[in-house]
Image (tube, rainbow, N blue to C red; front, side, top):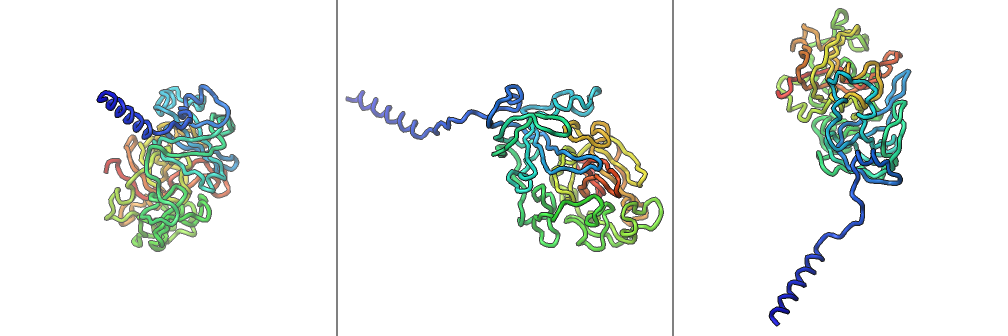
Length: 376
């Protein structure tokens, strides 16, 4: 009888454990991006991978960014021959650099059906595998997405109406409204030559500047000379400059700098104030008086064609003439040294067709308001 009691106790324990165990879902495990590329499955599938960039497409003559976005994922590190610095780097390796794209349509972006994950997030997505059109070519992608979910990664940024201190506190498509200090959508993305947060960093009062910056009344833009504004000249002569207060630290205004992949990939709404960390690739003095302080794009291939390839030209940040004026009471904004790793703060815009010209076809920081050596 004692043995029977023990057996019954063990059986009861086994039944209890079985009852508490999670039920089998019956759903297959998500495929990796590499499995999808190798197997090319049909019908709806679920994939799991790590985000390494986002990208966009554009029209040409003039350049204009389109609203669709592609979240590019893979399982491991970049192929060794598609990273910056490879001596044989060329556009023919673009397909290998692409990995697998998760296609978010313009309608999905506008309705916020899915939010763009951050670089480094692990995501799961459900859709239909296809060879889809991108940048006058075809690329491997998931279309007709019904799910895009971050399963490992950063906490989501704040949505509309939520309190904020800086633009970077808010979702990628929002800015932090200065008066309300809440995350707010713009009526429309800012054009390159708009008056609001303009290319010269012009202001009359603090209210003209993004949060984290103030209007410096001690300096007025010059009428003539090397440091006079080239664009919007007549409108901006005599106006002041938006600057970071002398008392503010880098952590105050750039607590979480983004990557150059974010800068060139079309992540943010134009007009947003952004902070980007990167290594200075080259310094070019343009005829319009701007200094291009170009930053290395470590994976320069999966982006639309622009005037210059990203593996030669890098990501664009521009130090405009008024900020370089040595007569400013705060001193000229110097250009960083070549190969220096820096964090750059400025206004995000798309250089498409200023002054009725063809533009360049890239997203840029223009103007740079301030920069710091990375780590400071």
